[in-house]
Image 1 (cartoon, one colour):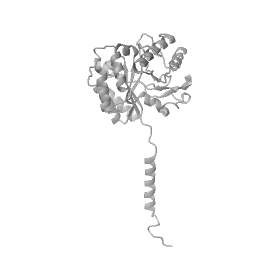
Image 2 (cartoon, rainbow, N blue to C red):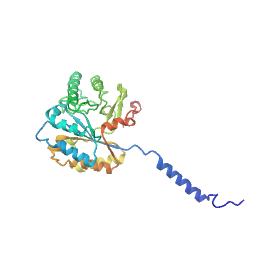
Image 3 (cartoon, helix red, strand yellow):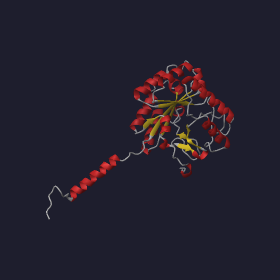
Image 4 (cartoon, one colour):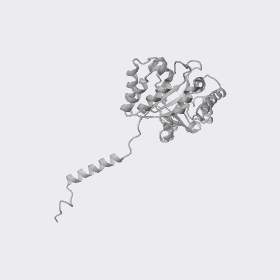
Amino acid sequence: MNRSKNTLLTRREFVATSLAGATALTACASPPPKKLMLIRYDAESRQKEEIAGFFEKMVSVHRALEIPASFFCMGAAMEMRETEFRSFFNEVKDDPLFDIQDHSYSHVGLGYDRGISVDELRADFDRSFDVHERLRGSRPIGVTMAGTGSRDGEPLSGFDATEKSRAELDMLAGLGVRMINTFHSNVDSSKAFINYRDLGHSEVMGFPSGYGDNGWLRGRKFGDPEEFILSQIKERGERGEHIPVMLHDDTEWIDVDDKELKWVSLIADAGRKAGFELVTHQECYRRKSLWADFDMAQHKPS
């Protein structure tokens, strides 16, 4: 029986139609999760005159270039520069580009084999949280860990390392902390988002931390700073890994005299070109798929 050309597909037409359909289905499929760049500032300078103008310039640059960033503010610095911090907080309070968190009151060390007691640590963080509440009307939910040099001995491998370090995590969770550095044995702290379920705190997110400017920029520990940081962004992007970048207000503004904040502009631009999505730590916490399902029992150390 003869059929018209309009009702019968040739083999070539069938194959072409099938390929087109497959292409359409692929295009509609959910894209893979984007690799993230987390830019943060540890705002800890207590040099009132030398640091003047930093916040105004920083807000201008970040808004002009739409660069999200988290600010982990030290309590003693907030009190020393209260007028500046209060003005900064008021300016950015409704702007999702800016995420305000805490860096302890006096730069105390968490996760060391020596160091002050858990009660002293609690008092220090609680004091800093009170400053946040007084200056901006709310307490933070995130903290970053501070380095103390050799004062407290060698850093431990994680909050799981000793009874005291476990108690430190319990203390922070009790203060309402829901975000802190990834600090767990056998986990790459510069790459991984985790939760602390195995330590009794499934509600707490661990976020990657690394690439501190005191090392690669101020200290020039890895050669030319620009070559180093751009190469790291490129390599992380090619491997599909998240990248954290830790800046300091005094390093940028005072130590390397970067009054135009060219380094954050350079980093953000390179990150976007490498395919990173720039996000705040608060945004990462909201994306629970990043961290809430992390299973330490199934994690295989590299």
